[in-house]
Length: 175
Image 1: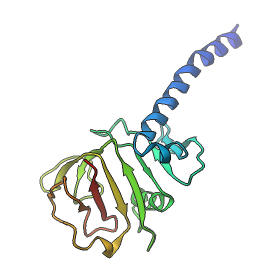
Image 2 (image 1 turned 135 degrees about the vertical axis):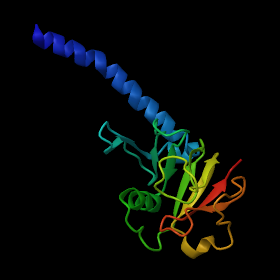
Image 3 (image 1 turned 90 degrees about the vertical axis):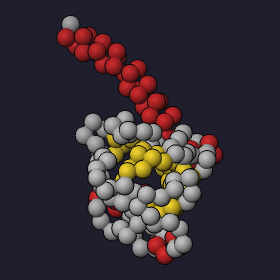
Image 4 (image 1 turned 120 degrees about the vertical axis):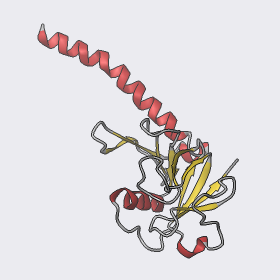
């Protein structure tokens, strides 16, 4: 009887898990043009925060779904160089030199500090901004010269986010 009950509970949970994965994949795919998203590897995170692969891809791109704990939509898709940059940022290490990456965030972006890569929320002086749909060029170094590095930029125009840090990147609005 116990075995039947356990199997019944597992069977009842499987559709919910499958639906959650389907929802995360759909969210992740919303970040990029269909041609990129359709062949991208989709990554998610488990309950402990560890990265998991929800779907293997075939085109060298990756996508991640919206993070439900952030204040706005933030699914993203990027190339292999962008993943190296993202992992460097997450792990608080220097990004690889001379590896320019590209990230789509066509569903918009989470509100964030324009000056502090690790700010968890708005505070006095951390220049919290709102971003809409955009693309990002990461790890571009001096190639961003000439774009606004203002702490409170006009987010309807291209600008450098996190200027003066190893994670400075060009934000390019698409609307």
